[in-house]
Image 1 (tube, rainbow, N blue to C red):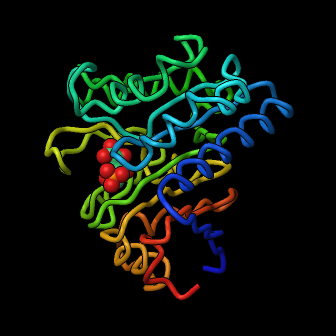
Image 2 (image 1 turned 90 degrees about the vertical axis):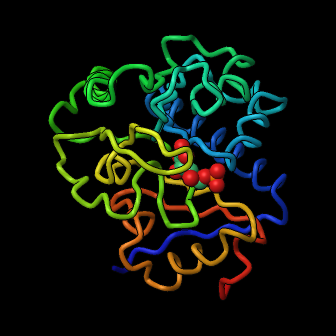
Length: 246
Ligand code: 6PG
């Protein structure tokens, strides 16, 4: 496949957070100028947390058109929303409670109902939002993804290959740390995004980053993320990029 990602290397994790926040702000501004709203899907895990905290601080807080921003999640752990492992709960703590976004524009995945029911109801929520794309796949303006040491992304773990059907936008799966049921967007939905930005930090991720970006990635889930019509960025800190030939 000819498509290559743009790779950006930040000097340290703080710079990674700032550069991620800059991408968030700029994409939001561009989208709102073109079509009046901005849709972004965010990840859980520890890597995006500093970026989320930066977004709640100036100058970013005032620069983002929050009133026209809709926040979705790429995945969620099926735990109560106030549980420490809840991605929504973390995001609330990190930035959502400190920014002027209308609550109906925060589209949390329902982690507190049965996984199958949660998957169906989140798909319906996306269908309502992306009206006119019923049947076809949604196209987020921006998706932030992380990578696990095993190459998973969102909650698409190695071995979940059947994850395909384009009529199913959200899957209920089990795995990861913590090993609980999770909801995750599918490869097809993620790849439909207009822009995808992987955010990866730390030495322990360097081997998997190299395997994905230079080793062909084999069957690693994160290697299956290649938006055919979108922009594709890998934002790494120096440690995560340390095994790459750049
Ligand atoms: C989640 C994620 C997951 C995450 C990676 C990396 O909810 O756990 O969306 O895919 O991005 O596991 O996690 P870290 O940032 O904690 O390394």
